[in-house]
Each structure stands twice: as structure tokens, then as C-alpha cells.
Length: 162
Image 1 (spheres, one colour):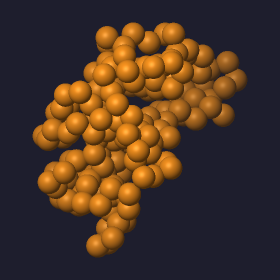
Image 2 (cartoon, one colour; image 1 turned 180 degrees about the vertical axis):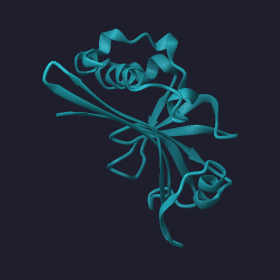
Image 3 (cartoon, helix red, strand yellow; image 1 turned 90 degrees about the horizontal axis):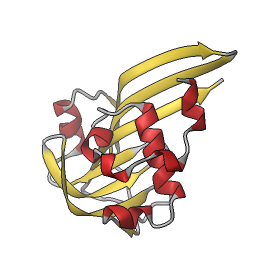
Image 4 (cartoon, helix red, strand yellow; image 1 turned 180 degrees about the horizontal axis):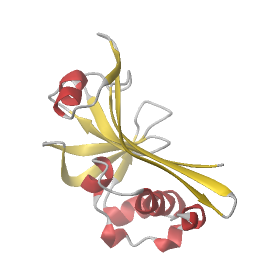
């Protein structure tokens, strides 16, 4: 795992993208990191994928319109958003609390105005050369004020170097 910290944008082949796997937490941290670095670091990376960046109305979300639907969590969407730690599908037609129940994601906050749920998918710690690497992958379901009537569901890929 020590090579995670030195991943470069050039290490990623966009033809290898499995967006559904990234959204549904079926990818690993190195694959997500390579993709995220490529997306953020390559000029016109989104264009290469046919994605159109659109205003999210939320400073914490970078949102894209996809050229074709992606099938995730038993649904389809053409809108995804990225948080600081991972991708989220923006879903219509289901309440976040209902989706969380279907996905066995426990609620941390569940009110009429806000839903936030998280389920740990994988968690590990590795010591390598005096450095401790803590990996945590979580499946998240939430609502945000900027997306009324929508459920956001996706994966958080976190690597903490200590």
C-alpha cells in the first residue's frame, strides 16, 4: 500500500473506468486515487469521458452530467457529484432513508430535513517503513439542501497517512 501516496495523474487509463464500481464501493483506494488524480489533474479529463460539468449549487460538490446513464444501486442516473472523498450518484424517485434501508446503511441523522447514513465497507491499517496507512471505504447515503428531492449515494475512499 505504500505506493498509494505516490500515485500520479499519468498513472490512470480512462478506458479502464468502471464508474458503477467506484460509486458502489466495489473499487479499491488505489484505483479511486489514480482516477481522482487524473480527473483533477488532466486538462479536459471530463471532456475525454464525455462528461459535462454543471453547477451543483453546493461549494462542496463538483457535479457532472454523463453522456449515458450509469446503473447503480438498482437505479439509473445521468448525474454524479464528487465530494472531497469520493463519487456520489444523484438519484431521483427514492427517498434517501428508503435507499439506505435497501442498502443496509444505518442512519446517523434522519430528520424530515436531513438524512445522513454511512456503512463501513472496508477498513484496514498497515505499517510500512515507519509510516502508518489507514484505509477506510464507506458507502454513504445522504440528502443535501442544494439538491431537493434527490438522494445522493456513493462511496468515500479515505487514506490517512500517519
